[in-house]
Length: 227
Image 1 (cartoon, rainbow, N blue to C red):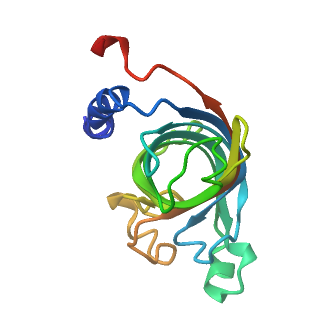
Image 2: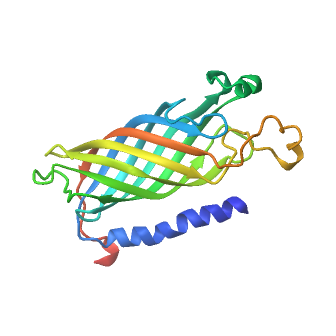
């Protein structure tokens, strides 16, 4: 029931978004691939970029107009951290570590600081802000928090190649609503046993960064439904 509620909260607004995007008059989209890194911030790691692991992703971006875009992003990577890599005496004594594979899906809106039109020489580049809603899946875990809903937000840059390609870079901070990505948050029956192990009640974060290459896709200005 709890996951069903999260699923509805995530996908119900997307039906309205799809209806809105199909009715736009700005006929362009982009299909892209990206490679980069992902890392976790929580009870074990509090140092940005420490423990970064490779990640790969694919995305589709719909260019609504010269300022606004909508993007669907699917990525795969691994989250990992180990107490043994830190100088803290407490962490050395605790000697805890974890590894989790993650598939992450995001629906993001983008705002271009500069007008940007794919393959136009008079709009060579733009930086942008992005934000939206995400869903993380940990496929090889049977423990709690196999699915997580989160809020990704960040910035990026896109650069025209003057042909049918555009390239750029993305950076996302991902706020989760769980303190258990690292399995450090105890169940109620485990609190006494975790007294010396569990030290924080703050929710975990993830961070994602990548470079990408996208290919322009032309399509009709309106969906057939609206003709």
